[in-house]
Image (cartoon, rainbow over all chains, first blue to last red; front, side, top):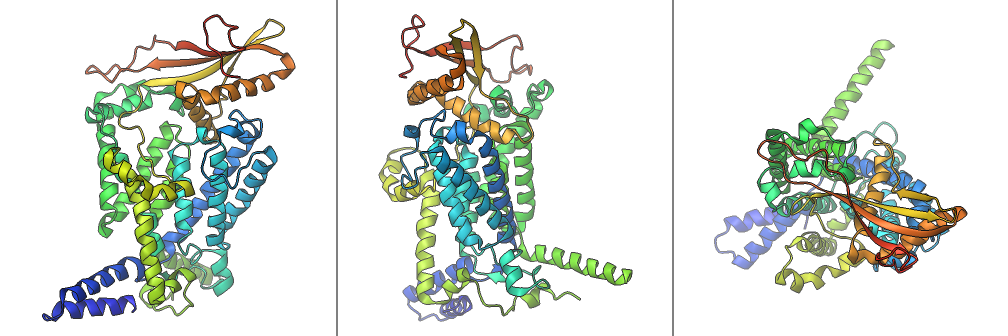
Length: 324
Length: 198
């Protein structure tokens, strides 16, 4: 039964008073499943997310290369015995194998970025990221964890359906800037992951420093996390620090819950990007912001993106005609 | 003129594999099962620590082993109240003493390398991570092999930060780093400092 069929069945079941409740329940579940997992949506959000994730993975890999020997090699600062107990089947216990993995991940992340068989290369990227992260878990932060989580979850999505080399080869240049509609079941997993990050980031901030509105001041004074040093006027300002501390809690809570409300998404995505930008400016948090930016794109309105792209192409064509 | 979006909804392209899978009842059943399992693996590990979480933990162990890890307690429950640093004091055969600190990179691009060294530093300083001490000593001895190190001491350094006060002054700028020599190689070469297990 198609999603539309399921919806029709559900509607019929609602209106027929003598239909058993089990059938009505079944029809209701089918309708919800259809809406959540089957009814097609624009492929633009997945394409934008894929490009950001691919670029982030590329930078992640390139920035690991200069420290590959010191942090991951066979004579690294953490011994081969210090590798994680998980994912043993791809051990990377020699410097050569680490370099091979880094080079393979570079190629793989480029393939993801340009959209050449992205599902395959997202799966390959996930395995390589896991293997590299497993070798030295002592250097990982939450940004590294969400990088591998979202790489895996994006592999369940048709990320190459729009704005990709695959689409260019399939439909040619003229239709390359249109996005087909795709089943959203993989997209839901990415969305769930992103909202869980914010919800539980909020949930876990139960300490008194957060309650009292001074946590951001403490975080900004941690010298080992400072990116550009400390600005005393900022960290000593009671009002500003309280606003930023409680503002962080409010934003994380809203993102965790209200990203599911379609009307609020555009504003919330912008607020989330600003939150990550402000964190990245002040603190050394690695790739947490860029990876979540990729995940946040799953909440972007694909039809609105298509309208913008259409307008831009139309404008370009008009100017080309005018120039002729 | 460009085709409007509504018309493109009726796009008659061959569906991608991800969309094709939900065109059959069997495919929808597989996807429904995958959504339930993956959804549980994404949400349940975030349950607060306690008996309930311990009971349920086997449910998401396969996800953890596959690399799908959930831990979003960032700066939680409070940000830590100490700036951290780890450095090494290396005495060379010549009698000269050099201090090694984690490398410092530029704050624009280098920041994306820097955080890894800072994370390592956060962990190597802990007594519960003494498994990291011996490899660190061995790595430092290799780094300085040409100068023949005869003693290497790891030092944890920290600054305590009080919470922001009513009058707004967060820290006394005159307060410097505290230091504690937490292990030395060879064991026993530095008086009371314990060995590093190297």
